[in-house]
Image (spheres, helix red, strand yellow):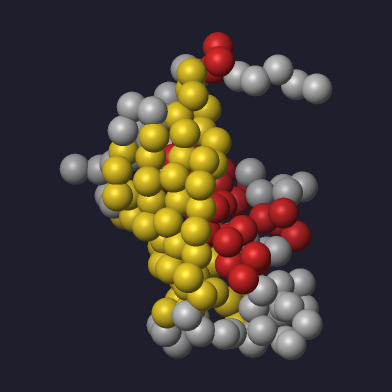
Length: 147
């Protein structure tokens, strides 16, 4: 059984990156199955910290991008929207080049919260980061006012 309320369409997910940090960091949605969503990000000067390694914050951007998009695919966007509530990350291995791939799996898909386990790996398949993302599912009528 699939976790998706809305079947992922990779072309659409990738087009949503236009004019966002996802476009800046070359985040690309690559695949999905019934229980996961996969995206990757470039590892180069755009995502490096001063020592030439993948910046931990860039890893968190990738993790939150794939996890929040996964949550969006689990809700009715005519009734709800999702916002990040909490994210943590354990950085396991430094990367200098290539692409880093993130796979989001659901831990909990509830009425008001979603929790995602997101694993980042190098091109060689070695773990570089483990992240957990909690998303709040909010009814559209409860949107905070814009300033």
